[in-house]
Image (cartoon, rainbow, N blue to C red; front, top):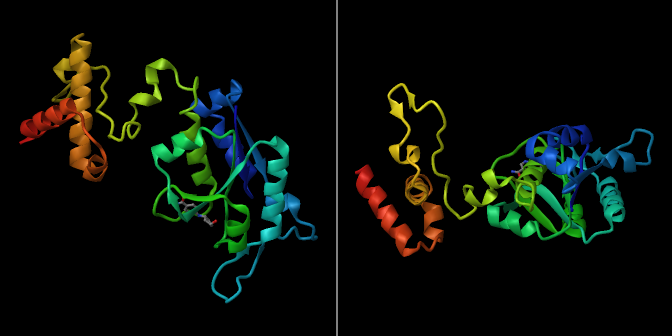
Length: 246
Ligand SMILES: NC(=O)c1ccc(N[C@@H]2CC[C@@H](O)C2)nc1
């Protein structure tokens, strides 16, 4: 069982989003659990203050250390697991499929979603084990980033995806982009389903799919291809793809 704890000012945002699809089923089957911890519940002043003005001036507010620290402490107490605390921000390490599949090994992940201009740096330094980013762009809160992490990790856990849509054939799972997918009808306007997919030759279909994955990766994300050591067969297929497109 993988346990996700999300420290967030908007707990309903998290619970509402994880109820659907793959994550919803994983929750129902107790393969994962998700708990939310609201820093506002760990304030002690009348106004339940979670933010304050930044030292040095400038626009916006900064989230205070103490409510965040106490919320994380409560989350750690709850599951008693060896929790890893991750702060979601554009300053973090950009997540990849391999980083996420490594994260599956743990049993408890505490994801900290900030709001406003950010959080007191001392919380990042003192209380967080890691800082992750879902990409080089800014969003108004860490919640959507936390949801991306929860979804991407959950679907990698054993038993979550049925065999028919196993994660292993995914984009990025073998460092390549996905092949194209088709379903009925066979013909849409002048665009027909590739003939090879209509036959039943599974070896030929697998080969075609690998060729497409290699070709699309070469065309769209050559940087990913740089990192891959291709097998002789993959090299042959990519060469064939390049000939066919020229
Ligand atoms: N790219 C990302 O993963 C990302 C994460 C969080 C974020 N915004 C929050 C709001 C305030 C601060 O906590 C950070 N933006 C982008």
